[in-house]
Image 1 (cartoon, chains in turn green, yellow):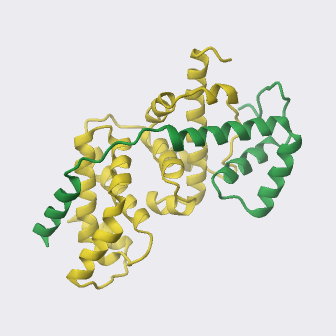
Image 2: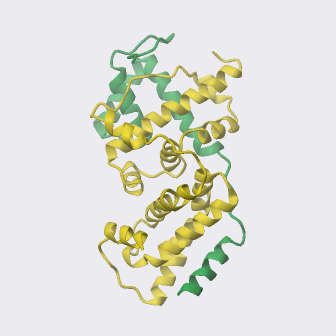
Image 3: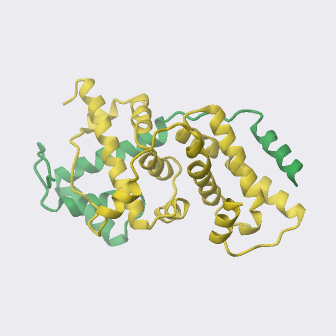
Length: 87
Length: 200
């Protein structure tokens, strides 16, 4: 297992820890301390900043670009009539 | 009936509701989630009829077990949990899908505090910015169902880790590690699209 891969921006020696916090932060699960650490870190670490941007963008794509399926028009009524039959 | 036992074992507390209250809970707290439940079902089954069946089944069960639901609590997470259990217990058995690797087992084997493998997928931001949605959708759909599920719950539905742990009946540490692996797999898929679009 490779620790880190090469990047034009160089490699971060704290990357393992940064990546962990980065995911937590983007998922809104990081503590205040963790958030403060990473926010400061990515201002000076280009490698982690790039990773952060990539992860953020992927989440954004998932949130906004995945097409929603329209619910079949009769489904709500179908469920309600089944319920009233069983009640 | 096996399924009754399981549900009741997990939800020990019982709430007493009148018929009017039951209908009110159903209409005001359950039915508003129909849209996202149907979409969740579709992302699991990839079939419109199956999704319809799965969602109907979920709402029927929710109504039948309404006494284990506390009014005003997190109905969405509760419904998702029923849907996910129905999918695993009833639906997956019926379907002709070949048996998949048991990721839970794999995870238990590898799991430690050290859940975060520091493997990076070298994917560039400008490559992702040009993606229009189809690539993301195809990449997500190609993930094994356990990995797909955590990404749907977290990114599309916005559940917290704690809610996901309850929906999936797994510890929070496992939520985190499964999500981490799922994201790496997704990124690898996206990178191969980026490669085919001419990005390096």
